[in-house]
Length: 118
Image 1 (cartoon, rainbow, N blue to C red):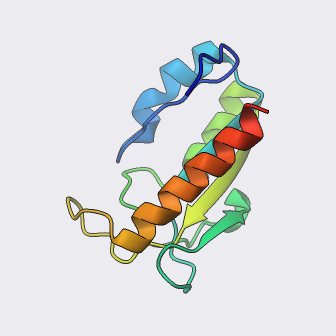
Image 2: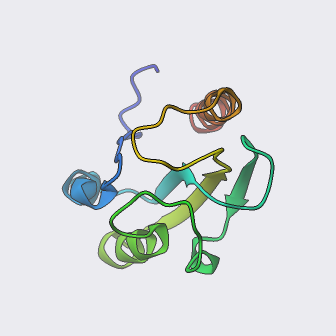
């Protein structure tokens, strides 16, 4: 990715709440979360979700559910939060991504890159 001083990429892994210091210091206007989301769709399906409607969202491998993390970010950083969900094939910790999900992650990354850097 080209140098973009107005863009901060953070790989939060299974504990994105551990990255809040970086995010608070950056003082974003918008945080885009990309995460596995059980949407009862084919593996690799990508969909924008309203994080406020994800309180019962399954498939999370995080210690803090995405909606709680988003609520924290909106409160502490006074920023918007968008959630891009990708339907996983499975959510067993340590299991590699399926081919369909790997392709979806690439499509999502390419699309976000084009959107944010244009």
